[in-house]
Image (tube, rainbow, N blue to C red):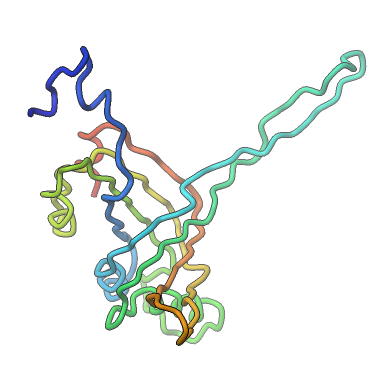
Amino acid sequence: MPANTLIDSRTRSVADPLRNFKFQVEVFHFNQGIKQSLGAIGFTSVEGLNMSTEMIPYREGGWNTNPHKMPGMTDFSPVTMSSGVFYQKPGMWDAAKQMFAVQWGNGTIGMGEDYRFNMLIRVFDHPVTRGVGAAVNGDPQGAVLAFQLYNAWVANVAFSGLNAMENAILVHQMTVHHEGLEVYWNQDNVTALR
């Protein structure tokens, strides 16, 4: 059935919600070694894509029934990404070690390299799968929504606990702080992002 087939006078793109399990994370503006390491990781979850604006109450004499509410600073929550398959993929830890170089000044960051990076998270429509693997090579066909994070840096890398009594997998997580979040809604805009 074509994507634009009418169902109860509505197209599929209008009637169906976007599923949240087909996505890809891509890193930009980072040194090439770390970019390749992080690009090779298949993340199983991305949490924390939100923003909030502080409210400043302002009281005025003569207007005593309720305060005025003015917008204050806008902040963006840290984003946490998890992955279960990470042996021989040290990208998260290597990216975290860049922060050691910044804090200790030990010279491991080369000239022109920065510990900050931009991230692009593309969401793919279901059942479209042709673009998921191709997006790594710069062809994001099938992406219908994207989140772009600006000036991100690695704040935390964590490993799940080890327990011989459990039947679980070892998972590692990376939390990044960032200074801005942009959401791209138009499929043409998402495809054009690089």
